[in-house]
Length: 284
Length: 283
Image (cartoon, rainbow over the protein chains, first blue to last red):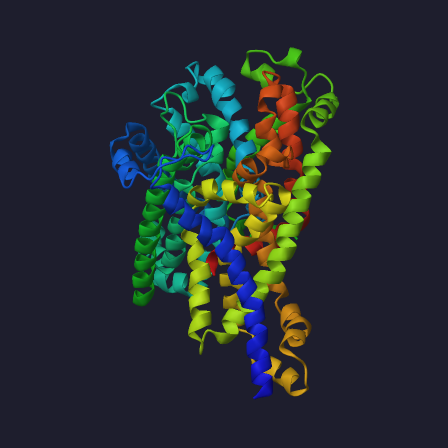
């Protein structure tokens, strides 16, 4: 009995300070963020008023906020689909009976370990000087209809490395005799992939979709490096807008409301994806 | 011998190998360009692509010396090491403890089950919503500096790491601890003597994931430390952008210096990094 008490006491002494730390720097700022979203606080000074739901009503009529949501979702969706298709192809190739396998796998993973900001600067140079010189067109980054594609490319360049790796570990869980049985049944090429391989690596597909979607929705570094939201505010991601206008633009209260909505959107997407994941796992 | 060689060649899928080798161009071209431009002089930057991408006339380290001076390279490098090092060390200690407390009590205690879901649900909270309140909060507590950034990282990585540790501990039988307990060791001693050393594979995963995330992060130091006059290696590239001006040679020398520590780390610990990333994502 005494040792049971000692054990319980030790666990409480471990967990309570850690929970308090987590509360202080995660939950408390979250609550404060909700509170600020009902004020017209500008971010400096001490004077502000409670404005009720005013910020939320304004959010839905603010075209700049609307554009940033449209841009972020367009980017996240296109990049996620592109990244997953290319990663699957890469993983199949890197999992084939190839020469220099570990060398190639090691090389293709490099983009993932590099900092997104510096990668963004390097690509910014490519888009501004190298590509226009080759194709003799104006820079993509200066064109408000094309700049988002440049950001998709940079996001993809880095994320494909990570997602390929996850798909490879998925492919390695498929036992060799499954393929042998399939080839006896005459399933080869696309059919084998469609009906045998892909269903077996479905859980890895879901992991990749969830991770990829979440990362792309929070895109920030690439925007800072490539466009700073331009041209003509066409590439302002939600995170960038909250940072830019909330921290420096005197819209602390208003952007807090934006952040609350962004948070709710992320939670909804995550819950939907997790539900989908659970359903898939039940089927297996 | 020749027969054997032919057999060995046949086993490899050469078309795919060649395509993959050609595809390496997409990975290596940006890196090649970075190195080349970093070594060149502004006078060598012609308008033609071939001129831009050809080897420099001489391989001089002047750009690197200048970039180090402009960005205060050693200071930023030291700060980055300090922040990443402390974050990783503190994370391993307290996240593994929390994972342990949760994993061993979740089955029978509502309090620990709640604690677990409370912490893990923090994964869905985007930094964007915490950012503005945290800037105020760290300023009020006078930790709007590197110390504050370390605390924040420890909190931000807690959901993922507690999840990983708790998952790993399910596979470590409780009988081990009970045996030590019978011998009179306290729970605290048992943890450090028996459980903590058993979790080394998970410590490695946590260290790799936490280190990759903190080393390359720009947003947190940007908003928290901007007033302290300190920068990290990636942040320095952003803050000194205006000083590089149109001297791309200087800028690229600085970018290369910023990428180098991670590339070296990758060459040294490639296996651990790849395993860590896979473990973290799949579990």
